[in-house]
Structure formats: structure tokens, C-alpha cells
Image (cartoon, rainbow, N blue to C red; front, side, top):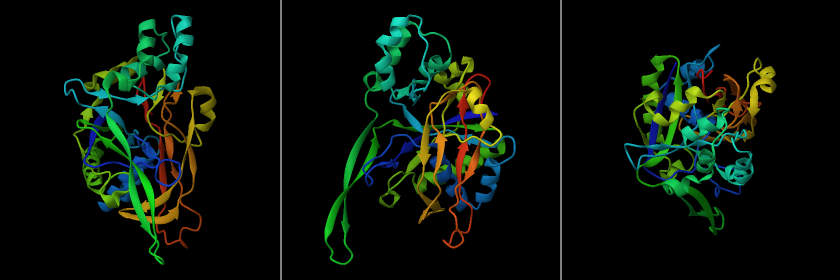
Length: 335
């Protein structure tokens, strides 16, 4: 198995939906379940939908596993900065007073650099200097990488032509910044096909409001993760950090109490998109473990069938899946 990193450089604002009123709320990162669904739609336009679902649903080990998308900055090309979600476990400290002194600041941290996260989940006590560095906010250290904005939209009543204004939340990345993803590839035959599908997805756009040109991006080459210095520390970590959404298979559910050290859940819901076509049909809701969970060993996860009941009557001619495969990073590799 090989792990690669790739960059997405956005040519337009993005809107990744979040629970809220209307479209005002947006997030900066994109969950692996949503990203995988978008990629499957790109494969569908290439006539390879069934093949990619079989590759992800393969017994034992899937042919590839996607992480969620997280922010990066290449403002300094020789020293790019990547962010990963803060681990949900409590770090250990060499000095007990540091645990009290920095507790509130550490809880507020949403993002860490990979080397910081690997120290956090390693199980080794942090020195005072390391704890102080973790407590420092990323924006203060590197500056702001993106700008969040509300864009006005106008809706017209079809009968009276009365207008009403509403707002759409967007994120605009500053130059040399964007999102990156990681991918575990167990079958190298999929590497070139994945690059082709990502290039097509960049033309289709990612996220919401694609009718207005949002979400279009260019994708960079696949870079072996061992060439990215910040991630090498995970090879020594005794625990595994989850960088995707995860849904346990039936065989793994009995292992969760034993191996999960820290966890949280998120609900995935929304409408079905098939190829380029959005539908008004809602898929089944599902709850998954979220990014930042920590476990003693990697867990594979599974694809989840979220096809609504009575799909045939609704005009849906295929099954609908949500990706719950776990992308873990730590000592011993991933599932």
C-alpha cells in the first residue's frame, strides 16, 4: 500500500454545506463521504461507476481509501504547511501544571500541523515548550489563508414576481492556498484513473452552487507522503488518528469499545446527485465517526447503502452509497 498527497487549487469560491438556516453556513474542509460521492459521480461520467463502487466495496481491503480535504498553504514553496484536525484525545504533559494552564486554549484549537498532531497522539508526554506551541493559534503563526463571505442572492416569486433576498456563505482562498487530500492506494492500477477522475471533477466543481461556477479547481500530481516531512512523525505514533469519516462494518462493531480511545460523531444527510444531475430525492441519514478520532489500531470501515425506500417509485434506477471507509494514519499503516 502506498499513500499519496495531492493539492486542489481552487479557481473560484467554494460552498460546502453545513447545518444551518438556508445556505448561510459553510465549512472550510470537506468530509471524505461527500468528497468520495463527488468523485464517484465523476467516474460515472467516465462510464466507470460500477467499477469504482466494486473497488471500494471489495472484500477485505478496498483498492483505495480517501481522506477528507483539509487546508494547506504553499505561500513558501520550499516549506508548505498542512493542517490536520485536532485529535479528540487528551494529550499527556511532563509538567502537570501545563495541563491546567493550556487546557482551554488546546480545546479551542481546530487545526494542528501534522508534526504537532503526531506528538499529541503518540502517547508520549509533551514538554512545556511543545505544549505552549500547541496552544498557539495557527492563524497567528501563519496568517489567514482564506476569507469567508456572505454573497447576496435574489429569489423571484413565480406568480407575483415579488423579490426576496437571501445569502450564501462562501470561502475564497488567498493565492497559493487551497485544500489537500490523502489517498491510500492498495491497487496501483487505480492511480492514473483517480487522477483522471479528479481532473474531471475539477471541471465539474466541488460543493454547492456549482451553477454559479463555484468549486472549480485544478488538481496537482500525486506526491508520495514520505516526501512530505511533516507527516513522517506519525510512523512513530503508538495510536492512530482518523483523517476521514468512518462507519464500522458489522465485524468491527465489537472492536470499538476495546480500540477507540476518543471519538465524536457527525450526521450525514442531503439530496442525491447522480452524475451531473441533482435530484430532489433525499438519501437516508447516517451517523459516522468524524475526523480527529483516535484508536489503538486502524479500522477498515465499510460503504453504507443510503438508498431511500421506494427508490423505483421515485425514479431512481441505481443504488446510492456513502463512503464510511476509515483513513487512519499512525504506526503500522492504515487498514
